[in-house]
Length: 162
Ligand code: PNS
Image (cartoon, rainbow, N blue to C red; front, top):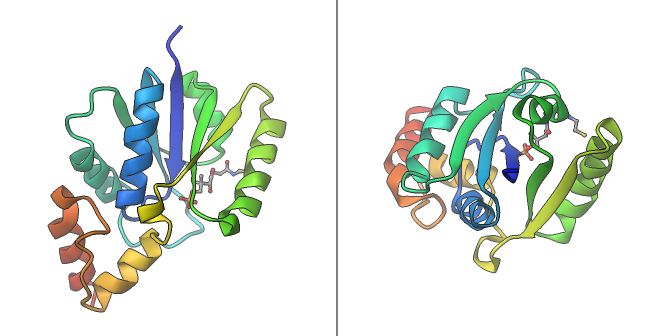
């Protein structure tokens, strides 16, 4: 049986922290599905298609990654994909409470689902999509914060928003 995991998130936009988790998780599983959430209640900067395109570019060359999107409950998406493992990255203690609640709630919704937490690489413990957007919008350098291959795309979008 193939071991399939899902790495869900907003990825608005993908950062080097996300890419680090994607690379490490893809070595552990036969297939890793990076799942971009479409949340009608949350305003995102990048459209779902833009977020998926950025991820696609960033992971090109990695053989076992699928990129998809979902709306609604993550557990329903997991069922549709026949996946049982959720991958989440943990940066700091401050992430823990929220992630703990989501992991327990997802398990309550579907007892077959396990959430695996991967500690971030210490280099990225300060990094988030929100920080990238703020620095980029204000004209700061986001060069070490997002994957090289999508740096220009992200910078352009953030500059155009000004
Ligand atoms: O990158 P984010 O914004 O922290 O990702 C959050 C995400 C997409 C993983 C979470 O909001 C989610 O799973 N949303 C889907 C809706 C859902 O299943 N909610 C119940 C979870 S307890």
